[in-house]
Length: 279
Image (cartoon, rainbow, N blue to C red):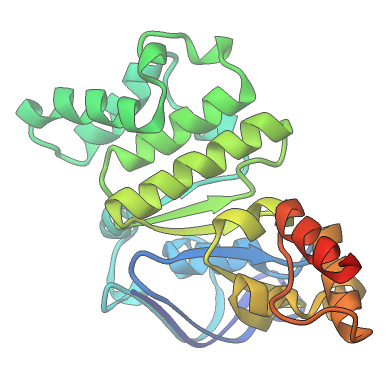
């Protein structure tokens, strides 16, 4: 479990708090999407979970972050990396080798995985992530979506309990974006891996995430199940968060007394709602 208790943080060279009194619990096996306008503190929050704050980025730090019952202050970044794997926004800067197989091998060797386990780890992970056919490919020849999968595979091979991702589909087309989210769902449901993802594509989060956290100006504004949070579509729009049109439609129909029940979070649900009203 990840437990964040009244966390406030200001970067050493900052003039205001990047995080303000954040309290949040993410259960084992959770799938949390973090949304909010630019500068809301989303990436800073991820870096507080994986220990980069306070071990790399220094500043005024108040409160507590614990991962699997251990305070991140008391763990080195190396120890944290065994619990929490992070896929950063700039994928190319995260790659350290030229060939896919070597990218996975690098982490396994550096984290002391027994040599007799390495081959099965590589083979199984590439298959789980759906890129077994890319094992001997040059990374420079891969598409954006393929590179994302390689970066995720390199982390998953280390078997962390928690996977953090910072806008992994930012530069991907809709098909590739959906493939990434489908893979994350498989890792979450099949292996119980906790997934925490900063993402702007709320339609995908609505479909794949279990919970949403909304941030603004370093504060946690909303947190809860997807439908519950998206019920605040009016406030989210005012914050600069673009909700799916089906969410806006169903909230408007509920507010007007035309429809009742849960809000719609996909096109199929919206179609059923409209058909019911027309009947």
